[in-house]
Length: 436
Ligand code: UGA
Image 1 (cartoon, rainbow, N blue to C red):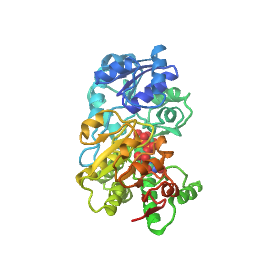
Image 2 (image 1 turned 90 degrees about the vertical axis):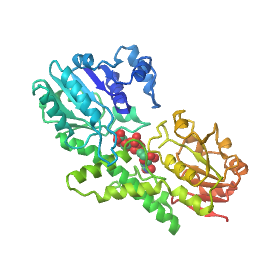
Image 3 (image 1 turned 90 degrees about the horizontal axis):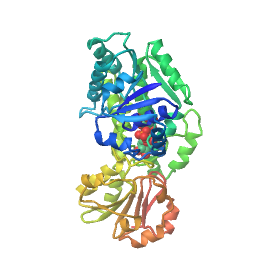
Image 4 (image 1 turned 180 degrees about the horizontal axis):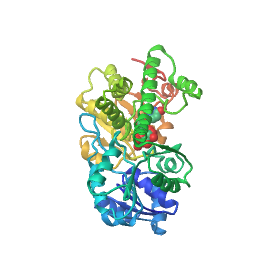
């Protein structure tokens, strides 16, 4: 099938390459000329496992190309995916201006029947708005159908999630369009759900908000564990064995980050307000997360009354392992707060590119964990990178000014920290001690 994908961010790129893998012919369109050049040369601008190999195979097989020319790409394609960004406005509403702009451009380029699929995460009613734009631009039902097809892939596991997702949601009332998409998705190992555009749009927000709520819930239980000497890891394990609860997203830590949960939870509250529908649970989820990500700052301040001039070592900057993405990462909120309190920050994250150095020019970026802890008064583990699991803790404790460890992702055993010479250790509901 001939497909055009507009927007080569995470979702657009993974979708395009997955379709190309199954022998469809893909033209990707993006306004960013640098991205287009890189991609046509087989270079992926983000880090995502397996993507670059697949891109090069698809380029070699002439199954994918990248261009800025939307008009030509639309005319050549039977299905058009819109996968452009939908950032958050200051009032938590969703900025759909890029989707609207692209829809206008697409409607001008349409020469015969096309299926237009909205993959971007958009508030309820957006598919209807797009349909109106097409109708206002002189098109009618014979020229197009609009389908809502939200995406559920995770960064770090994006390809696998797209190719073997739990479900693919298709929101549309046109049998003609659904037949075409059913054919497109047939080779994918997934369950198809056919519904209305409004329901499809809401499934996306409900999924992300529910997962975020699970995280905030387990984090509140973990915080109680710290006070009553109970163990969150055992509690999560026991909860997860109950199929009604499921074991996923019960890992306590310093909160969720990334480009999705923070944005989509706020969007759902804002959508609720628009329709006079309260979302107390989601509002609490957001509030719990905002406090949770600053928990390490609270702990370090309780230990040292004054942080002025103290070196704090941040292990891991990305919002989770397996990605180079730092958007809304808890580490950034922690660093900001520590800087305000006069601390000096040394950090280590092998995944993070130079762009962060422009955001935080005052921070010292180190090449390894040992450099990072030199003269340091505390380590804060913000991301559970593989290399932090089996660190030589004894060696780290020796180098530090004072061996204090805050394990924000519960990857270091308390007894091991004790034996290695750490004088002070905190986890998230998985034990703590302070020898002072
Ligand atoms: C999330 C959803 O999981 C995807 O299904 C969805 O498609 C995507 O958002 C999106 O809307 O595009 P992603 O943001 O890539 O995916 O990352 P997750 O793996 O969901 O993790 C999000 C955050 O939650 C991370 O900061 C992670 O550390 C944290 N987390 C996750 C926990 O603190 N505990 C857990 O048990 C699980």
